Image (cartoon, rainbow over all chains, first blue to last red; front, side):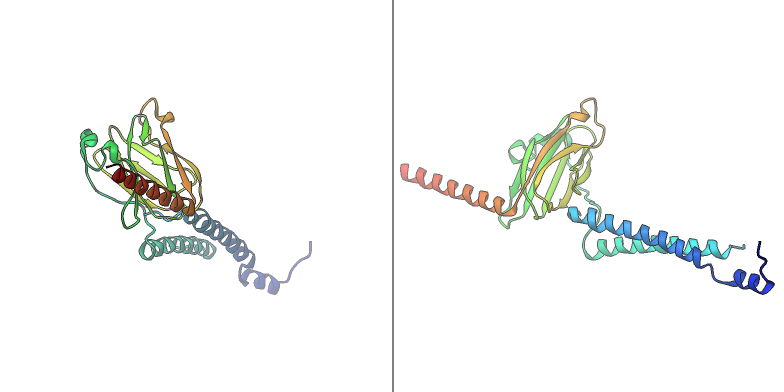
Length: 50
Length: 184
């Protein structure tokens, strides 16, 4: 196993969690897109109700 | 209380999504009139047949002089009266429902027309139907042993077809009146 230096280890620990952000925003983006599709594409397209 | 920074990010994203959804719904409700039906109007369910508005002769589709279309229907175990109606597409329709006996619900699948029909109250829903076709009108609130057979039919026709049929019926009516006057 390659050993990393203390400096590299600190750099990894202090760097922003890019992978987490990508995952989080992908899931959120997908959910928002699905909600908007259902609201505007399915619900409102069937006629406004009041 | 310590909250892990990553957990805080997840929570903020979730709350942000909820805030977005709520704000879209509120904007549509406030500025475009998209809201759940809300009407408080009482009626004596035992005397519906004696009322002027929901008497048997007054049920069904009615077109006012200003062109507004109102559909008056009665729900009772186990049918909707009248059993079949024809309405135009892409036109605002006002539905007024009463129940003659117990709690009913009415829903037209593939549309947004859906409401509860509570005995003692008039349920009013305004909606429009963009797509012509044949739609069932189903009872979606258990009302007894025949609940699953409680349905009626709604024919949504093109607006042009509706206008043409109304023009034709007016022509027939005026021809009939002229004929009667000539016979006199």
